[in-house]
Image (cartoon, rainbow, N blue to C red; front, side, top):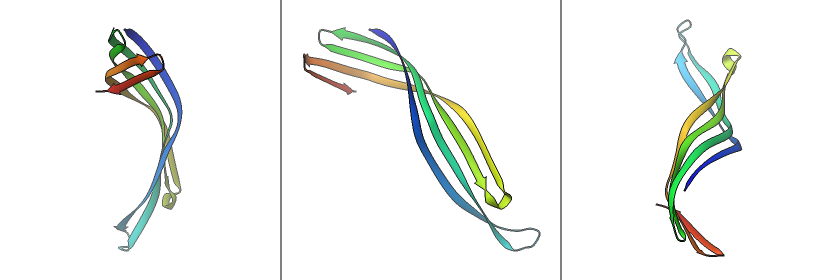
Length: 115
């Protein structure tokens, strides 16, 4: 068995973190604190995979793997400096599955598992 598959999904995966840094101002010698918030969001995920396997009777053994991508946005807010920065990036990656075994037990029942 040989095959190729493409997937694309919309996503709404996001997270925020707010943190503060305390320091001594070198001009005044007084302690100060600066706070900021960072945001991250994944808007979409896509992959293209190839599949290679063997079949016997009602059993199929195969593995698949390929390239994957995620569309991410990052931003940060620093109110003390009246600053907002943001960027978008497409991150590349990979995907591998296998060996994967599929059993066709009868017309109505199938079973599968990843070893």
